[in-house]
Length: 383
Image (cartoon, rainbow, N blue to C red):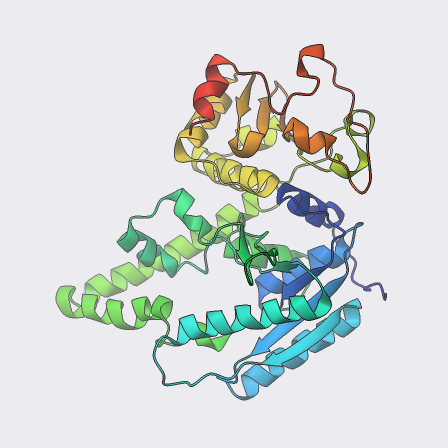
């Protein structure tokens, strides 16, 4: 397999290993990647190729033929990218009737049908898509209408079964913890290119109708001045988002020193550590944002609002404590560092054949499937 000539940031070598293991995957397991050419899917492909545990990859670009020459150029861009990176590329046509109803839903179903078919052809069980936390600041209005809070940013589930019953095809969405601005910042800082889809401006799509239909109605009701004020507010939010992303996008878990001595080889990249000061020095709103993403990216499970409140209070008061997280994970808050620990059964899980369970320093934990219950962990496990 050809190695890409791209010079990647050092942290990218570990990114896929951590994301995959948090999702319960072997990072070397072969994957089918949905490659649109947009910043999100291109970043995911680069993380896969940069990984020191690079898997076999089949990148699939689905062309609906709705944007003429622009669609053709998207396909050529994806083909060139995969050729340069030594990735197998599949271009599949899935034409759609432009004027038929529910275009967005039909396009989504058609793409998944193609991805499932390609996974079957390649005898692969894992399909990766690059859904992120939101599709742009235009979704602010949609979230207002729905009354969504931070947890609502996740959109799709981190993983979901696809295909026929018993087939065990798995769709995994490893970028759900990242915002669109963070993805684009990471791409720009690395000097990487991507394609922008003009259909993101097309009012036939519900997300775009918020801007193309709802906003004109607001102008008719409240007058053009009110609409201009709202547009100015949207620009301010977008500027704020770019600023916020610069403070949180590069916060990542680092390996813990003791993992080589205490863990099976396949579990050494699970969890990680982060200097506490990196989070504490952030403003309160950014602390919440950073912790939410770090927990989701590290465990493949989004923390609840109540749990985030508890963690933020721990940071604010300087408390050193161990907190239970969803899925049997735990967060150890030390004086100088935050440590993310996986479930004990994940540490003892074999990588390929039989692997001895790691040595545990406390006899009462030997053979345990989770941390001993404490007054705090009992109620936090219910959050």
